[in-house]
Length: 209
Image (cartoon, rainbow, N blue to C red; front, side):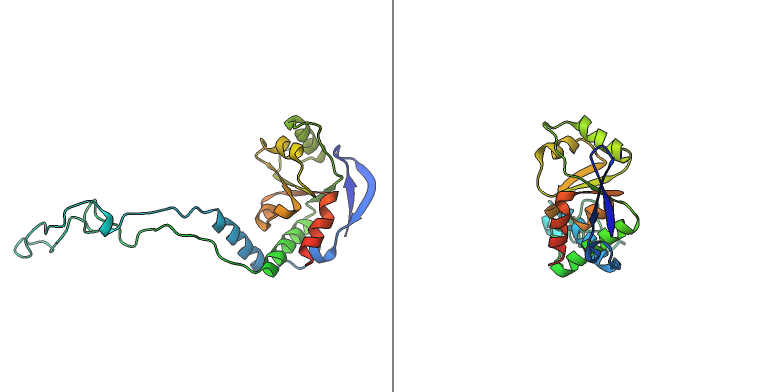
């Protein structure tokens, strides 16, 4: 598929680029997308939750009342989970929520995400640009020129650009990553993808392996 190239003022440069159909025009695999997004979100979890169990609660171990004759249920310890302040039964323990996915499935998920965005016409190709110094106002002007100031956007750079990244860091709705940092979640979480020319070849190279 052909996409026109815009400059950072939002104007057509008169040039077009050919996006690979094997990356941007496949039949999306929803299950692969689901698994990759699930893995990403699982990896964000700290897994440091912990509840004290019966053996960890502070309290005496003496039998708190005689076995028979009280008219109530027998009880042996104040640590009993049935009592207030007692231990938790099967409470959460520190654990890792991460799980493994094959590289081929993750590539399929990213290609599916790109294809979904392309089908929705939410991909913009922008010529490479740079700022002399980090300046949030300049980045906002780029967003306004592209009509994205009120939308969640993801800018994909070919290589790391400190000035562009720092210029966008204060904006909650915009995110700047390099092609090697792309994730299925980041692609789908943005309303619009802004692909800089320098990132196209790297994206297609990484996903065609």
